[in-house]
Length: 228
Image 1 (cartoon, helix red, strand yellow):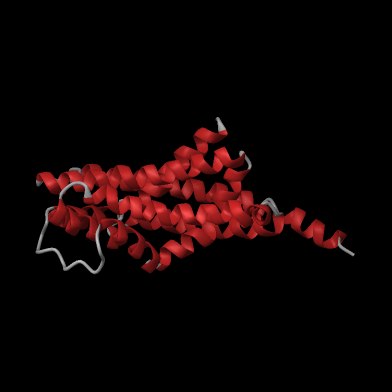
Image 2 (spheres, rainbow, N blue to C red; image 1 turned 90 degrees about the vertical axis):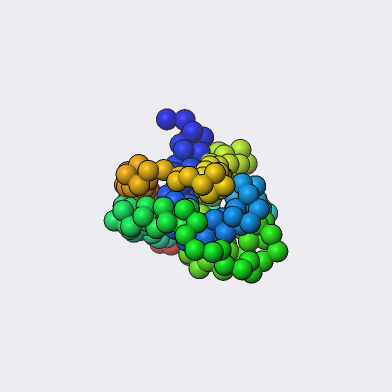
């Protein structure tokens, strides 16, 4: 398989599995769409995308060399793979409940809460920074993925970023369109099936990450033994 195609596709699946789970960004998307219409969904994603672009810029600016070292890649791979497996299992396990929660939220049940930010773009930035799982994701899965992408140079990093953001844009635009039109995003059965499939894909990717990271430990130990 072409490495760039794998980067884009796997980044899209990982991003989609996280986007489809109910959380603060979904709540903000529903609330802001009820206020401002469809455009709120893409604007929230744009705010989130700007923040993640800043992280990748930091990778290019200084972290890139560090991320190529086996002593960094090995633990990141193991930690990121483990987290992906846990996330995947949790996503598949909660698929039914998550689909029901999303159905209720996108139906506009209840009045939207007062906005705690100035506009949808600011919401995308604030909610990402306030989410501890976002930081955990970038410290493990995100950094390891960035290291893998850097094997293909700056183009690989751009493809990874494009796949990751495309999943958020696709999902939250669909949510905003459904809320604005007063419809459900997906029938619950379809939503459950998609979440289950994404969860199983995360488990498989996590196992690959875990194996990739664990396979680098011999070179780490070899390098330590060779050091004076």
